[in-house]
Length: 177
Image: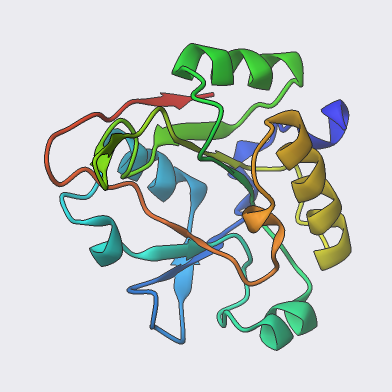
């Protein structure tokens, strides 16, 4: 596990796919460098207004299209529980030699929701050293969900994630590894 994630070849051009909205059917290539810039300068929109990123280079987001394409470019984890600090998440990454990754707080991190103050919530996006087949990608996603003690939502082939956003100037932290 440790050696598969480690990436020393950042400029391999492993693109994900960006969709203008959750309802957009056709995406465009989106690079890891573009994601890093966005993490450093999050969108000033509500989460629902942010664009969707899918970790595959397929230009369609249905399960059938993704399986036929059979090529995933990025790995990702959503930490919606556990209330880990950014330094704790970074330490987990270091323990497993996860490099070439971005970590950013999600739109609901440390905000009130239905009268309850939310804790830390993070998204971790990892650029692997090579593209992965659907089967290999799912194996890696399951392993990452165990390592970070996260939910299994990110293990679904057709699941994407929202771009970083912070419309109210509230809590937002990030790290580039």
